[in-house]
Image (cartoon, rainbow, N blue to C red; front, side):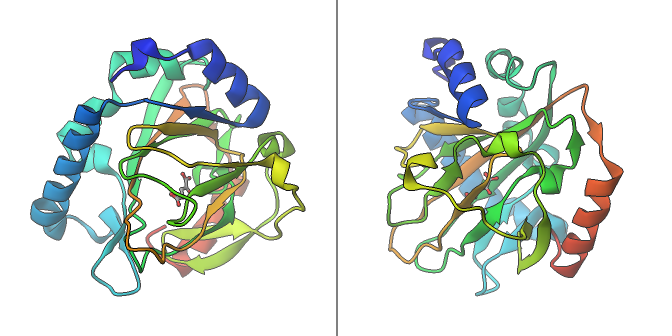
Length: 248
Ligand SMILES: O=C(O)CCC(=O)C(=O)O
């Protein structure tokens, strides 16, 4: 990781102000290559023997939409997520000692990659206080055309908004209503491989389907502060939605 070269002060400022920070060159080309190779190997060799909640498939019932719980299923990814330099960067953002909560992918494969409805992650994570975030790392180039993640800047300050089950496999709970937002309030995550965004768990975000011939693989690391706990009310709402469209 080239994280020593990153400006932690700028990242913290952008994250606190906008609920999302854009970080160019978060990983080196070699690191991106190693992650891609291990994901390919894992899908080919290990995934068939993992429980069903280790992945969500696209509508063709065979192409991977998401990998879940990689920190439980794969040592390479667990060790990567637990690196000391990463924890130093994350600690001020989660306002405490970082705890790894998940390692995941959003593969958005070429031509059939499905969309992600507008949502706040804390509708899934259910943590209080909401000191939880996601590092979204581009493994493929993310362009306007292949379904970039779009974030509503400042929406982390709105707190938890009303939700409804979305019926989308892999993203079972969405916003009941998308608030009116101007284009200037959006950050579109157009990324080169190795670039990343870091978003707060109350920041509204979404992505369109991928109808291009270019896959858009995102590799995600999720952290919370060790002081957060599960909010029973948020959890009950989430469980009802996840039961309708398992596994998430
Ligand atoms: O990768 C995507 O399209 C959506 C990602 C997402 O929902 C997230 O990072 O929480």
